[in-house]
Image (cartoon, rainbow, N blue to C red):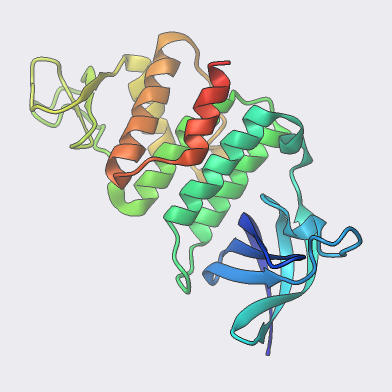
Length: 245
């Protein structure tokens, strides 16, 4: 039985001498594990479509317990990402987050769309990668069921709170202490969070900001995602190490 599907390659692991095992994200089937036979041979016609971060159309058949790729045609390979090590590291982090928040046999078109749009923003536009990262993290964790409450202070109702409670996922006033880690939240970073959480997905990466508000947004979105997922990401660690060199 053959299956045709469009998918983003999130991970590729060498298998035997010339094969690879791919973890891909589809809209209609969620995560899938695919075997790419002979893909590491120099003349393999699967090579381009099966590389990390390629968005491709796969024709798949069942073979000895594996879903095996019969044909693969690249739709978008995001070549710009492969020319910049920082962008490639950041894109790999996006892929790892998408994998963690997806499951096999569970349709997830929203996560696929968000990840593809983030890769497009990194590679095809001149958007600040730090803002793309923050928007991706906050929108992704909200989709996973951890949308923060930023309409106003969760304690007193003040519409302009100045702290973000990372564990509780709530905006608060400095005087309304509720314990736990609270990060500074300026008027600009608060407005950006509200925009990210409510805007049309096609306009998610269309905002701009600089200075301290942008740094606050970066810290809040990253810390909140890692806290809610209760884990770190090796790809994020590598990306952060590149920024320090």
